Picture (cartoon, rainbow, N blue to C red):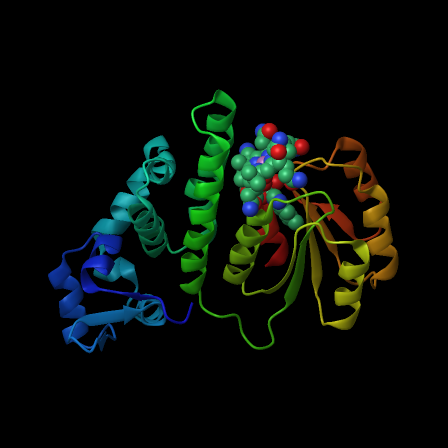
Length: 279
Ligand code: B12
């Protein structure tokens, strides 16, 4: 995502400021911009990050922050992103997400306030018959692009950052959950090695034993089948100093009980608790 660029009107929309304010920041040298061959200004995601770090959006756009604080946790905001995607307004949906991040300054808050409620709503709307499976696929596909754009705005973790290995257990195809977790991890200053969906235990063990992995995250949103022997197998072959964190609604009570009994394996119920565990 090194090549994500925004025009002054796009950035102005994201920050809810006037386009002339963005141009003034550029003219004053507060915000770096390059020119296209046609002479139009373009601002890279990296330069927006740099601007946020050095100028603090609070000082430059207190109105945005005040509005974000007012709207925090409001049902309108959590569903606006979903409604924009339902209405095929993919550009507006992405701008809405990015502008929230730029105003709140916390990926976790954006995920909890907007992205997760949108996913829950997708599930409910599908259940009610308001959307069909094609809509669900279309929206989750676009949300993956949105998350990618969001991730590009988070500063790169340091060279000596911890690395987490992420995998969906066999039978689980909810890949988006891995992406959500890796965006959150980046904000916590962690690197991710994402093995994907349906990952056999031998693969988790091989990677965890051959690369400097600090923790393993196993995701299971769908209870396809019992994974007690899977977790036990991974735990028996990976050094016990490497914690295994399991999460997602697919872990049945019996599996959660087993997790609690294994050495250095835990069930983490939310992203908030995950970020607290990692920090
Ligand atoms: C998008 C989606 C899909 C997409 C996936 C697209 C993709 N590329 O990822 C598609 C359409 C492919 C799909 C398919 C299916 N899905 Co689906 N899907 C969803 C949906 C709408 C969102 C899932 C998501 O990404 N959530 C985001 C996650 C991260 O949020 P969360 O689950 O609330 O998790 C929280 C915590 O548990 C924690 N957490 C989650 N994971 C982890 C991992 C770790 C390590 C940690 C620490 C924390 C953590 O963080 C979150 C916030 O705090 C949910 C509905 C819902 N309410 O979530 C259903 C849902 C998960 N799906 C479900 C089902 C049943 C299916 C299908 C069987 C449907 C079918 N009949 O074919 C298939 C199964 C495919 C498979 N084999 O896995 C059920 C699962 C029920 C269950 N527990 O068994 C759900 C809950 C819908 C429902 N209410 O029935 N699905």
